[in-house]
Amino acid sequence: MGFGERIRPVSYLKAHAADVLRDLADHREPMVITQNGTARAVLQDVASYEATQEMLALLKLLALGNDDIAKGRVAPAAETIAKRRGATRL
Image 1 (cartoon, rainbow, N blue to C red):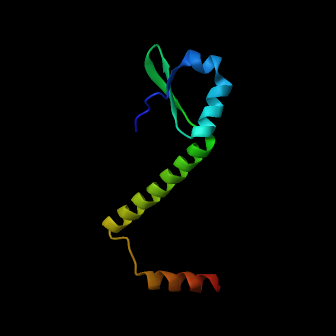
Image 2: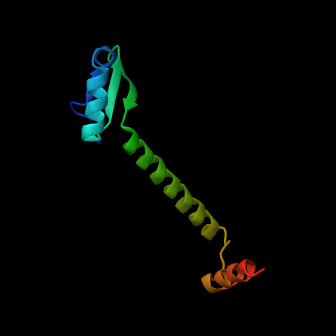
């Protein structure tokens, strides 16, 4: 992912905060904020942040599932479904 022209100094953020927020919402692309020429922060709109968090949660579930498979903690789907159906009838 290249940020290209989406790099701004912190002074730009201070002077143009409303424009930056509007730009983030319109383009849905992150912006790198620098301080003394060094990247210090990445800004992104809320919708993109929420989507990223959801994706990370799904990836974590996949990783946990893969770990269960690797450790042999598996059961046939039909057996698991039958147990669940029996538990809901109690």
